[in-house]
Image (tube, rainbow, N blue to C red; front, side):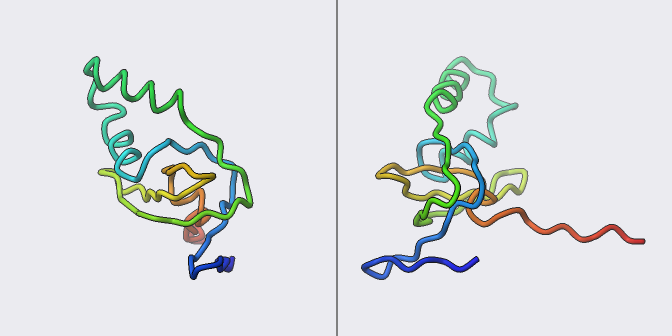
Length: 106
């Protein structure tokens, strides 16, 4: 897939699949992923619920500008990007497609 070039020299990438994103930058997604099953405090649960309640569906073929990247404690790749004036974070797979896996040995 080729990136799109927008006016002003911005490099746009296209969302490949329909995923759910969280509102906020990659630090938001990293915190969410890293604490989902470990921090069971009331404050953490409220914040996680708020993030899930306010998630956004990512439309396929929507051009976005990737602004930041991060890696979760488990090694998951994350990106944040602008979508219709909001900063959204999601797995890198939403923008770059699935990571190829090696074929099983015969």
